[in-house]
Length: 187
Image 1 (cartoon, one colour):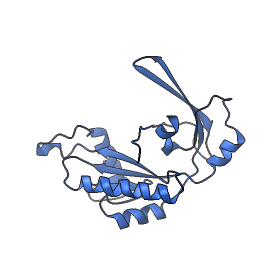
Image 2 (tube, one colour; image 1 turned 135 degrees about the vertical axis):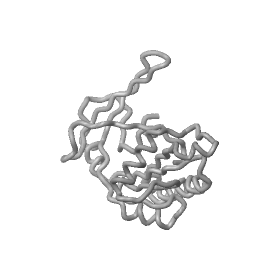
Image 3 (cartoon, helix red, strand yellow; image 1 turned 120 degrees about the horizontal axis):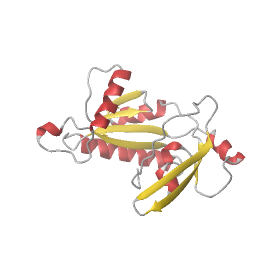
């Protein structure tokens, strides 16, 4: 369960062991990690379903080409600025709109739009443009994925606690936020 949940953060060990990762885990962490592809979309945008399909196909093709290793991790962020049209996207969040606006600013774009794909936080394109997406993934820098051990505990039926231990590559900050996302099979 844990490796699927945390695929975008690196190689994960779900077995009990000492707090320090084993040498083999650290060596595996030095290998280039996957490329992060963020798709900003909305159920109120007519082009978003096509972008979902293009991005899913790209992720599947990359995984097959990589011998089963997840080469591209896709996160979908449903924005809320299309909700004014009458259909309220149940997956939309103003937090995702704020995230997209931060990319618009960082990438020095004129406006935000859907479906927008942001690759590794450095490049963007329209989410329906398969050739542009493939090129952005090919050109994306790949960073070492940290080796991590995840311990999941359920103190009561309505709570899940996760603790992470591991070592990051040299030069990474010692403290930071850790996001983890559940992903659907096939993405």
